[in-house]
Figure 1: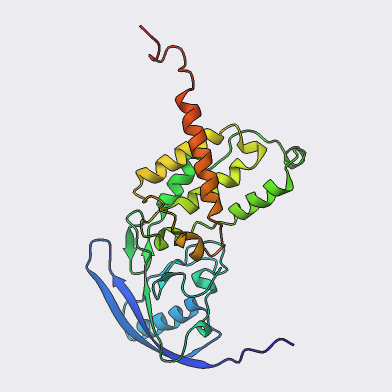
Figure 2 (figure 1 turned 90 degrees about the vertical axis):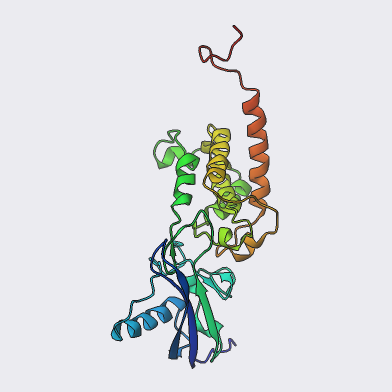
Length: 270
């Protein structure tokens, strides 16, 4: 038999980072939240607090959200020092108040990284991820209609790995958890997702070089193999993908160094 979880009410103190804008001073502000259902999601709790603030004529707490189903990755918050909070394999929207105790003080702040500039309160600009994807996270080869693509054989082990990598929702928790604010897990997942399929082979070298170089140019830090990234990932993306990407990057770097210079580009002897 499965034990039933009994719903209970709890009261907490919410300590939230408030900052009106990128250049404005910021700081933590405490808000009491009483008689909350333990079955509430964390975002529902924020809604309740915001309703109370609005009723009192205050400024509601700005936080990002969309699907509230752990799919879009926009609900990114650091809760009690951990991206997405105390749960494992869940985004902030999938965290429930039953994870906390009555009387707790819950500290909520935005993801902190140079490449994720703050917009307001708990909202940061994660468009740097979009720029990385735009630099190479696509396949330009024509694959035809679905039957044509399905006719190309793919080993099950490769298909399974590609699907594991494709589970990444680009939330940025890996960056927020890393002491260097590295985006290696995100980039590795996106590089591996395409590099494991036959359709991704023509641009494989160009893809990994462009995405890693864009990541570096945008101010993300380097990876020092602490693996905090995979520990907080809501989709449990394995850090093995980082090793896979490093191998691809090394091979692509060597091949590009010895690639002949096209005629007429000025690379030949005078």
